[in-house]
Length: 600
Image 1 (cartoon, one colour):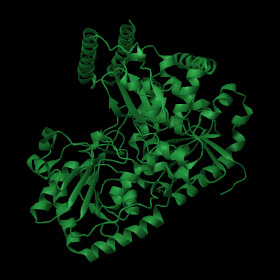
Image 2 (image 1 turned 60 degrees about the vertical axis):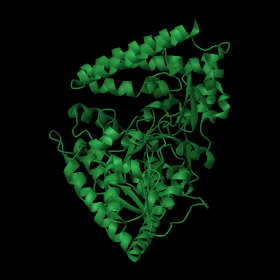
Image 3 (image 1 turned 30 degrees about the vertical axis):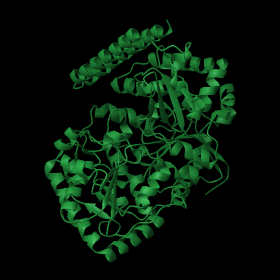
Image 4 (image 1 turned 135 degrees about the vertical axis):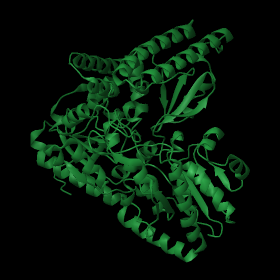
């Protein structure tokens, strides 16, 4: 790498709009743990920001003033639907905090949300999430494709966009096909991919037991989102398990996910009676969120990692392979980067042909998720026959495991991934640095004041944010308080509020009326039992029963209104957007009324 000068990189992944993008996703940890010496990485520490804003009214007022100016500037522009929605998603306080974060360049993943005040780079896995919040995997189509092409094309084609990387060849080709812009084509690069060595180092990892009683592991995703059970093929795994046991085999199946309702399992063809009978015997449910070292232990002690998923999950597959666990995956887009059938794992056929198709308007490949009984039957059958052969042939299993370990250590090195990526970024920045005004030449007092509110570059600090849930996960609900964990912090709020995406922003409670007041701490102990007391320790008195019932009625009624309105207006995107803005305003009014009632 050319180390002609140090490069500082702003990483705004801890802001609220990154929650649906999985924030500090483990897929990118290697870029932080193995970053070369001339790369300095800066990310907001939400606990430090929270404490600074509470104690320093001057800096808080300065940022709120900048937020209002940003909001006023955007309100004067004539915007179409895509521009309005993007602005609503990339909320003005988050835009200000992105701009305030120190760094020569910005690094974004999955989707571009740059401040456009300095150069930026983007790394993405799949194409559709790049267009969030307008498109998601599994939708099967792109709405407003012409407007999306124009708007996102302007961002990616902007002179401040230095490059767009992906480790999936199909993603690079789809970006090229969708935008058809030579200026964007020149910025497309294929990267390596790898797992941080720090995330796997553990001297206490268990070994694999005898293959006569093999262990199988199903995980709904690396970020452990509970709602992904069926999309990740959990029902197929349970149906396979019934056939596996019926064939006279022994073993243990561990499912790291929340157990779905019996009605949903029945709808997907699962024998609920079998699941109940085997629970605690051959089926083990690990329903709580597990720390990284606990996932490593599960992976290391399992013989097979089962992921008959409709979508790709890169981090989980690499983690399994580096721990010597045979991955069993589908042939969905991106799988070929990791697994070669019969050589470095088992690839089940049929998913790609059933799920992926060309978008009618743009011609790019899109995926559509829906229940497909025939495909499910085929995948269950393939699982039973392919795994049965390996279980019965220990020599073949050992040979495949050796190939997997050798392949993973060579191809999925976190150090190699980091060196290649940062070397490319450094070279491109060096070639273009003369075109940019260096941030150090711009005097901004707020940047200096907030400089110590960033995550420090030591392994424990990055481990804290990367190994924590990538979205707010409920830890405690006493009825009077809730405690959630997200991004390396514990979040406490009084009552049982309904949160919107922007409410998680550090600046939200100072910028918008009625937003739940959130306290950020590093540990549960630092909350000092606040969640055990009623609102703000008001004399230790709990809310009167009548008042509590009124509040509950307001919550239930408003939730019913939201659900009903969404169902009616969802087929009409623009009306849906207008209604969401009105509903958001009503919600703020409701929160203000509730806060007034609690203070009486």
